[in-house]
Amino acid sequence: MNAMQQAQAAYRTAAHPIRTPRGAEYEAFARITSRLKAIAGETTKGSSRFRELAAAIHDNRRLWTILAADAAGTDNLLPKELRARILYLAEFTRQHSGRVLREGAPARPLIEINTAVMRGLRDRSRGS
Image (cartoon, rainbow, N blue to C red; front, side):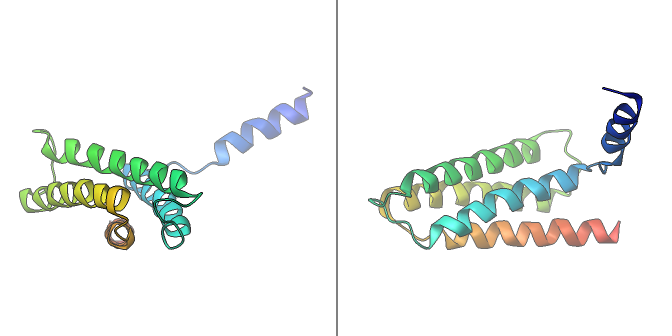
């Protein structure tokens, strides 16, 4: 690699924006919600895309499990009421995800919850 290529590589690395924790949360929700939206409407339990839906549901559950664990932590600085809401939504997500996979329930409520959280994350980042 010559000096010009090294300089370009160094500036390219530095040009990436710094991601805030809120931005990382938003990106995780956006990525998973996009996958759910793309698959949810056309997938039934016996369909060829059911595996993709199951993977997206699994990733969504993991995200909500991480959020719940963080909200339940003693060092979490969020207001108690917001922490309680996060725990409630995490439990709802866990239960409804099971219904989607077992009974073919619609994934729409999961998408709507994630979209609402994304809206909150975006709005809060604008205000800070």
